[in-house]
Length: 196
Length: 312
Figure 1 (cartoon, helix red, strand yellow):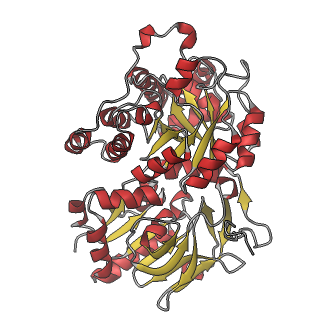
Figure 2 (tube, helix red, strand yellow):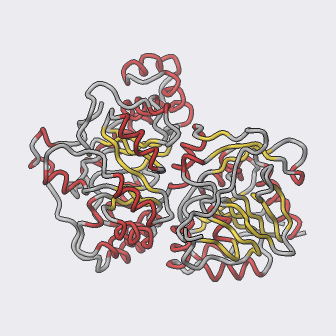
Figure 3 (cartoon, rainbow over the protein chains, first blue to last red):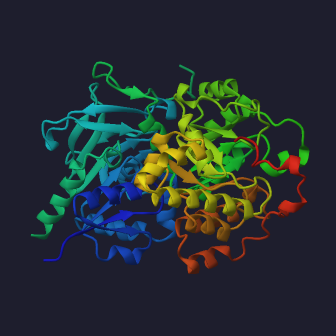
């Protein structure tokens, strides 16, 4: 069996940080800018960035439909921050089509402007005892989750900031900025599970 | 209840006993990470801001006049009217940046209170202090600053800049200074990278920059913050050129709304910035963009009207 390759959508945003995290785990990755590059991936990461920019470029380069199809076929897809907005069935304040794959409603810029961006330790049982240091930058929140969606992390007031539906994963924050590779390792495990 | 315009109630961080930290270095430099691979466009009205957002800009710079008009009009260029900035903040959902004069920390305080997402301490405005830049560590809002070479970049970072842009020569539509500054920056980085560690102390002195930052560049072969290009980009090829020379994204000022077809030019520059290594795509997006802004030969600008020499 060949080693898995994780695609990282490289239209705009902090895709290089995701690639670096995957490299630290010894996982191969490729940058995805055009549809042909989707052919050989075993999972996809949609990075942080500007969701309006990323959704526009998804359409211009005809990536939206092929990625939607891969998602429907069960390809593991993880969106961080803007990526979670791109992944969600519903996103408030986003006036253009996104992937609409994951049964969640996401509210953009839910904490306010940049001066309200923050970092905080979260308890995420799925990842073990050690708290996860989460960086929220003009972050969205998950306002609604569908029946099949499992909540992975909340703030103390109950605000949902990480969730999973099958092989789809959404985080409001940026694990790629902290050096803690536990989410990336989880995605890599899903790939192996799916292939074996 | 008549307040139809009311903002939705905001989610609240830090309810784990006040553990949330705002305005940290990670969230300040982190926003710049999110802008990477994108184009930040100068806009002077809410309508232009919407056009920029629709074209795929990753942020807008709100100002009263684009640099080419500042150059033409002369006089003292200052922070923009708060009404104009607030109007642009309301018009778009992408981050909004605004410029403060070099050293004018009160303009920066005003911009922070308006909720601007990034402050550009900019040589395009008339400097307010000829000896000191703003102490940017005192702010929760992050700053971007211009540089012409590595020393200038590291001095700005030591003052708290969370993002750097090479200066170029704003408002000229001439890429030559942007190229000069980007090459100078990377030349400085490569020199440090190849330098034995015991020579870094003298290098720090020569660069007038803290040893700790010099050591970071030596160890990592890059700046500790994101670096964009600015000052002179007028075509999709210009944008891709700066990316291939090592920029992580582009600021485009007069180049968009002073071109014949701003909407088309904006889209083309966004695409060329994403696909900066793909000549076929750059060729394709360059078709029919209309006339780019009329450029200025640098040699024809009187020495006292050169913007990039402001700041040090």
